[in-house]
Length: 132
Image 1: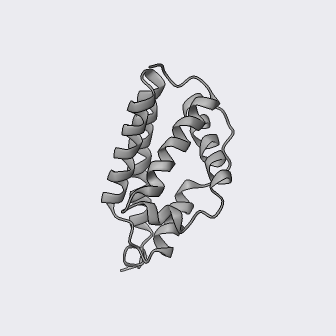
Image 2: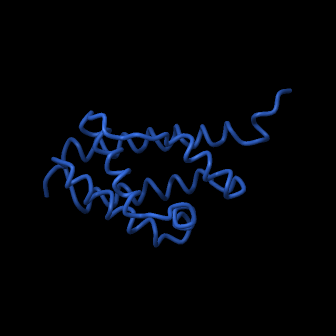
């Protein structure tokens, strides 16, 4: 196996990962009920991870707002266990396809990002935004 080297590798990782996500009984519904154009979404996520791993300014979007929106749309059903499953699938996909410095960076960045996104979701729930 080799490390992640280019956009094609990132696309392979992202598309393989989301193939597993879409079939996952717990987290799949969040994605399948939100994303209507998977081809477009995979390109956008490839831009995100290419930007993230290679420090290229390709991604245009706001993951924080997108995840807060999914939580709101689902009646605030997103839980830390869902992020745990997301990470497990991400790590499994990386380990199946790649090894090396960028593969490890993809794991570490996903770990940090998932923690940040869950905290943002939690912070923006109605019971946590009311002034006391």
